[in-house]
Length: 122
Image (cartoon, rainbow, N blue to C red; front, side, top):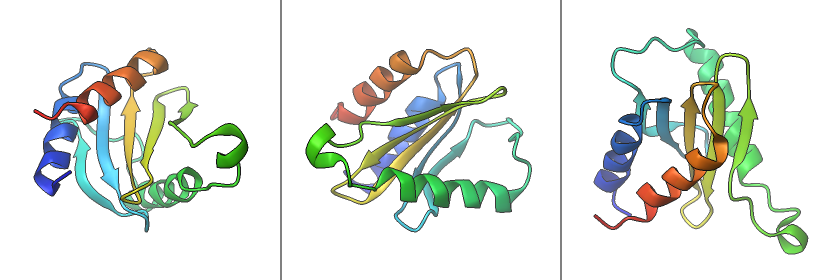
């Protein structure tokens, strides 16, 4: 997938009403594409905290110790009081998609929407 396509796919996700943030994070935990929905103020407020979170999620998502017995990770989800955080690893390219959504979001529906958007070739 090209760089432009990643940015476009993140933009498409951000059009969903419950999504607050959609970004591609590299293996070093750095945001490379995407970001917060326009006009939205992040809850984190502190760029250092957000960077630490990217780093943590990046490391957790690429772990492979249970892949052989349980299969690879499809996504990791955390439900918090103010937001739902979901990461989708792309193991071949060693990047991941990180999505933050409103706490009312249905995680399974969100996962299906992400798969739809990121597997659509248009």
